[in-house]
Length: 351
Image (cartoon, rainbow, N blue to C red; front, top):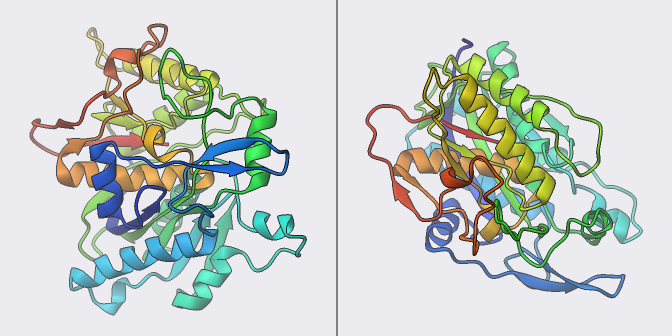
């Protein structure tokens, strides 16, 4: 069991809200307003953006970072807990500039560091896992005593290149139906989420990160391998020193391969740790309402996990007409908002 890392504050900007409270309100109410974009290939596709034209990757990040920093200040924290570094996970940074035939500009992490004066910056691009990796790296850097306080997260905008990429893999749909029998694709969206992390004993944490697991399955551009997901879950559980999770905020993209692989991994992990009686955690996906925010997905998931723990409520996975009976976790997928009543600390897992 490795040392926990404190979460001092969080901030979020999404396709359904410019802040965490606004996003949470719309998520719990089931509100979503997708827009249609006419792409250069002449095809109109649905996207998850707050406005017709969408937001840029830098402004999305600023909204989330500002909210996180203000939350730290509201807690009366001293300057000792101001982040010493920023770590950003992003898959769309500089893509818009290339589309406009401009050379890539400074990475968004460098621009944000210049604005806020954190002192050091790092950036990670591992496709949709970008911000999840960034958070895991931040945890390692804090545990290694390289930094006491880090702000970490992810930010991504919707670009035509990304839309066409997912379309070429034939996984782009008209809406996202995670774990549904009739699921047939995802829609891309914009979003950003950031967390201020600190070494245990520094600041006033609102929650803790207990463990992280990472695995690389470089075998297919758009299909997930359930064994890799299982290894990541198991590694995070080992770090946390706990074999059980109350809930899993899944990647839940609504594609056939993703939802099947995640269901298999969660079910296998539950069997391994059941000790005679199967214990499947609640399974959630926010992408049915918010769309797929690409590299920002993991950071948005953990910020929503923190909010769920603080509120002691779970949001609903957008209700499909019918859950896929072939998925082993179908009965555990949240179909309505629910309040937790179990006493003690709550443990959620996300990716």
